[in-house]
Image (cartoon, rainbow, N blue to C red):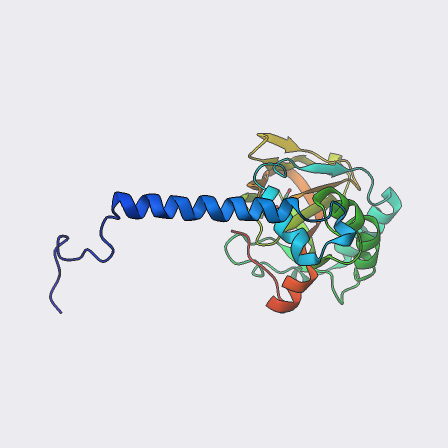
Length: 245
Ligand SMILES: O=C(O)CCC(=O)C(=O)O
Ligand SMILES: [Fe+2]
């Protein structure tokens, strides 16, 4: 095969001014039609379909859902300490390091584990709050795509680099007392702020927001992390863990 020089290898070419303006016109018409369609939908997420709720979320996410939120005391101190005891009883080989390819955490998926009971608790206490905030039906639309306990250690994996999560919504709950580590917290790029939780507090946010787990410099930091999506998307994609991007 002979190499082509740049002048020969012009697969698409420049688009003409007419083509460019036709493209802009089509894009504007599409955006206008979509806005009209969205404006015609019921205001109550319970009366809209799951797909309509997702469409509205996607439409608003870069303008209105750029700021993280906090829910204090999702778990009581007793509940956190019970999870923590469970974590400390796990052996090194119970912790996975290869489930989330590009941005791996040291974690234990909780489905069918000793922490399985947490799934219903989080579904009852957190999902309606997130659904209400982001315009979804309180019980019908949202489900966990993945839910797992994460361990950061100052001398091993100390944090997580800047990323977005490949789902709709994400949350994390601090499981151990914050005096067991220095540093930590979740940094959010749009607000340029680090959210540092008290034990049992939950931070939730749109998964599209750039964020990172700030490195700890002493001790250990345990989180419960969940990736949430619409039920129909999860069913369509099948189960399995998702990527951080
Ligand atoms: O460590 C944190 O605070 C954030 C965790 C996170 O973003 C993730 O697990 O995807
Ligand atoms: Fe994340």
